[in-house]
Image (cartoon, rainbow, N blue to C red; front, side, top):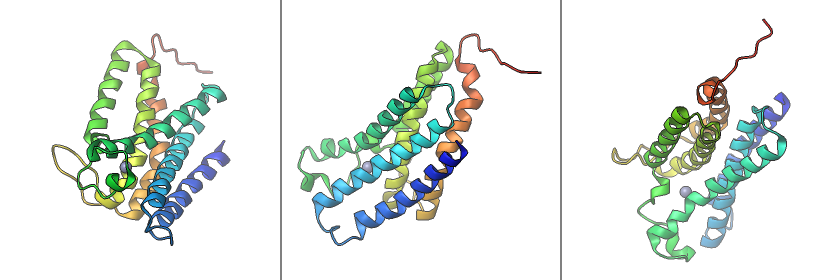
Length: 202
Ligand SMILES: [Zn+2]
């Protein structure tokens, strides 16, 4: 499993560098269609790898559930860009690209609020599935927002936006955060389970 974690971490670094090159600097980058499709693919890949890293730390779920959860995270990180259509009020790529305004799903404080509420609910109701779902959402939006934040910063409504995130910092965070989230998930899991029992050989 340690080998898998290392491979996935290397894969996320390579995907971020190669993805940004393909989207913004390749000979096809001038095409709106190519750029949009390639950008969506990179978001999906990063969402997939982030959640795969997270679930590589998870030993209590069977492999089918882990794969399904990874696919759900991948879909959510891809789905975030649907708000381009809401802002543009159009389904045509030419209208959806180069928007001045960002949509609600690109607002980091919106997701923070949603996930904090879900975590509170799961804590008080002892719903471990909602606790896991909160982390899956965090994985999906953090990977998407960090990547977009490299160009436009994080949108922290009502406090404004952060400056653009340095490329090396964003790739570092992209690689490290899924491991950190897995650590936090396991550390605090006990508080979200009814009658949690700590097994020990001592
Ligand atoms: Zn986006």
